[in-house]
Image (cartoon, rainbow, N blue to C red; front, top):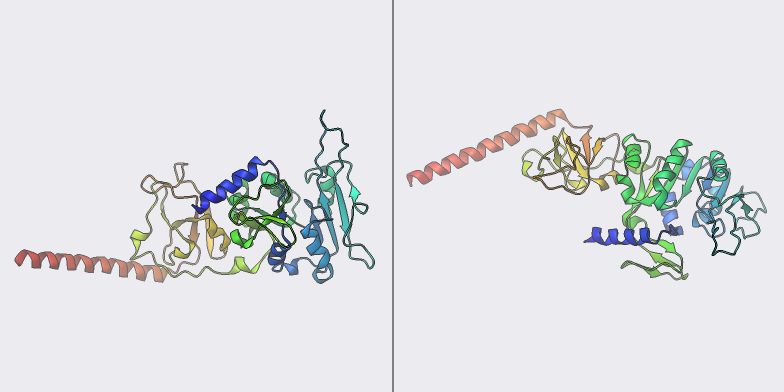
Length: 357
């Protein structure tokens, strides 16, 4: 039911054909607090942000000295409406640079920004020129262009911390980066990203839509993540495994089309299974590359979705435990076999007693 509701919110956003979802300062602060050691002497580029109103720009300008930044740049796209019905001349895209000097304005107005010759799209030569001069990109890019946006960051070998929809995990281009340990999930996920500010013309859809004390219109899809290649503590924390496979085989059905077992929840990953396991995509939020290896996504050996007795569970990621303890596995296997023998003996004895009764 929750998944259906989330998908409806996504469809509404897609139908609007607009990406005007602005990140709240509280969500930026909640995530950025875990990366402060990455920013010393760096140029930060927020290439989807109007410096006059962007909370990303506000965060970095307010914490410029604490983070030890070298420079902050924000660039904003302006749609070019060139048609027979538009008589007003379109404004070009623009950017603003802040270097933290004494007396320098950190809250620009319209007279302070520098206009591009074009629309300021992140793919434009002018924006790419600024990208090349930067070290770290931090922003909320257009969800509809997420694949293309990430591809550009990878092409120019940039560090980044960006917001995306959780479904981005399922894009083959993004999953490949995660599998190759070239990108990973940030700290906050789902409800950890509390909501987005939307313009007045947006419908306030969803049960958690609201207007805050500042008059901002907020929608909370609860289906977003932070994607990054900046190291953080969470990706080095082991998942604490408490369940066992041997002795509980019925809890872990095998796939029809792949030599592996299905695990419905990350917390149910068995500590004693040394083969392949299919886990939910939310596993990636707790993924430690030193503890597990990612094998592949979603498909079995026949190229079709993984299935159990002909039915396909929601998208699964196939993984393998790197730290399996061979001695422990053998002991549990023996215990499981012995348990099976004991059960058989009990069954035989019970059958015999019934036969003579």
